[in-house]
Image (tube, rainbow, N blue to C red; front, side, top):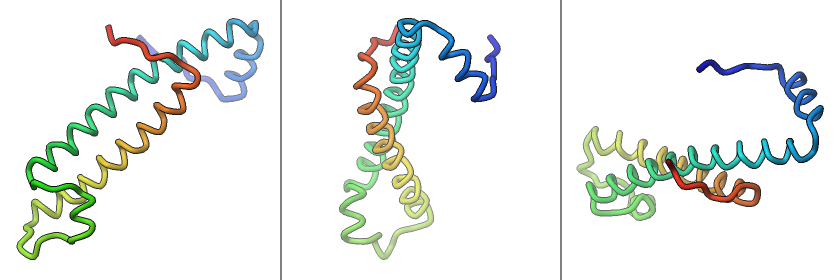
Length: 110
């Protein structure tokens, strides 16, 4: 299935040419399906953070307080960077889901 790519102005004009009820329906359905995608992303990010917490028996917050151990090797430094990434993804995704929740009810994955 190919995706139609339109210039923003063309898309906006087409969208606003629809009846208000249709616009609301399109927005609500699109937001609900995007929310499903975000929920999957959040689950993955949280799983990655939990894996790192289990591997090092600590949290990123605690590492930020204590610093990396003096004997931390290359792998732990790499994991530290990844840990920050997945924590940020989790926080940003959770915020996006919260914002979309005002517009779209949660859908159950098929």
